[in-house]
Amino acid sequence: MNKKLLAVAMAGLMAAPVASYADAKWYGRIHTAVTVTDADGGDNSTDVNNRASRFGVKGSEDLGNGLKAVYRYEFGVASDIADIQDNNRLSFVGLSGSFGTLTMGRVWSTMFNMGQGPLTFMQPGEGREVYGPGGGTFRISNALSLAGGSGNIKYQIDAVLDGGNADSDGADEVQYGIKYSANNMTLGLSRRDLSNATNSESTQAHVSYKTGSIKMFAGYLSQDDGSADNYSATQVGAQYTTAGGVALAIEFLNSEDDDAGIDNSHVNFQAMKKLSKTTLVHFNIGMDDVSGVDTNKYTVGLRKDF
Image (cartoon, rainbow, N blue to C red):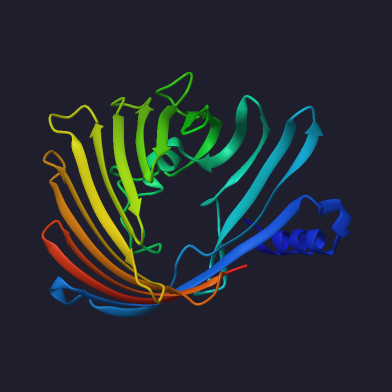
């Protein structure tokens, strides 16, 4: 990305007449933390690091007859070094109406919206969502996506169309899922099919429940990559909010794949306090056992939304 060109373009947009962008909302987040890492083998460190900071614009335009144009462009920023991160967040345009919302570009995926999104209370870098090996299921590029629903039921369907995939002459990836919410409980089921050398398939299910000041969730993911043993991941967690507004959370994740030699576990604790509607502070303890190597992380972070 040409940073000078981006800076000039952003300055021009901000200086343009306000009336031209009456339907647009500029927003952002600066999230920075200090992390102390204590790992087996003496690989220890203390770092100031970025936690998914971002800047963006989103909005909609009423086209009449129940139809709207929707758009969003967002890019990540590295708050610890004042740098811009390329192509790691959202960028889409679409139409919304009685048929649902149809978007094109880089979007939140079905597996995120129908399941993975609710499966964490932790701040970025601390929580562990139930992603398969290699990740990449939470935001997807080159996507055509349709989302909608009625009443307690929501659905989403994604098709990734990238002509550069030699293993596919159609959709390179398809995701589809459904979510049902009622009486403080949410149930979700989603699937991801890849057109690649192994035609890998992933299936995910989750349930979450809220009662008073307590939230709980559980999720399970199974991924078949054509090998003898599937990758699987199980995640459970709970959060309790005190009368003083301090949210205390714990998460546990275990992932296994005998073929790849994966047998990992992650335990994460968090205490979080909102200082205002747009400012919060958090403290995290993460304990990881990855391939037999134990790593403990202690994090204090501050997040400001605008």
